[in-house]
Length: 339
Image: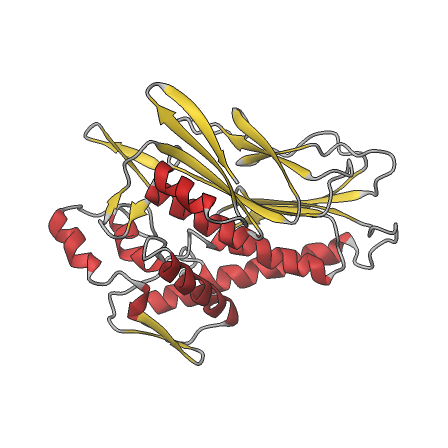
């Protein structure tokens, strides 16, 4: 974990979305930058040490760091599928039915989204994600028979909360919150910063972003959206769009980094739980702005599952959301903004 003072901040932060415009003006307060590792990747947090009246916040950088690290640890211990001792891992192995408040919160949110999206956003698709090699296990032997045998366990209706216990109707039912967990983590850390009376901050966890207030220039935070080209693995190297956000979450989902080629065919990580197969369409990435990063994360995944036309219709019906849909048309790449 690194803590650095930034007055002024000389360079932007390069993440999955490039964080732009961090050079401080003379009339802005001193900003602190925290960087570290979490959830198998990195995180970066930039925040103002003073409030809007110029009063210095009480929490010193070391205290903010400690509370942020504790927040990440609570998330990891709860819903990480890579941490074998997490609550989620133990539930998936049928070692316990007991939950904690974080898992219960994520489950309730996910269940509502599963109903709203008619089963397209579905953390209970974990067995399928594992089969295709995009979950918590190595890729299996994929066949129609294997897919059909797993689909009987897919659907959030296989789970129910009874008090603090999560009950499932079959031991083969499992959960994977990867399509929402990092966005949720951004919001969780944002609540910690709010509790410390921090009013201006930017949180990035593995490329998922939540921004509140203003950047060191006194303007909304500016975020760059990567160009979704296969092989564009360096965050910020090639940008397609730059957007301004404040008091919003921004998450991009795409099929240009998590994929593999098998027998000359590309298989990407977005799985349609209704068919059991990776989606095949011309939508290359979906960047969603929402009131929080949790919803931005979930809806970005949803849009990648349903494709360009259905995503356009969905976003047009939601005044609380804004979408940047990058798609292929022949050999060209185009962007459609829906707000």
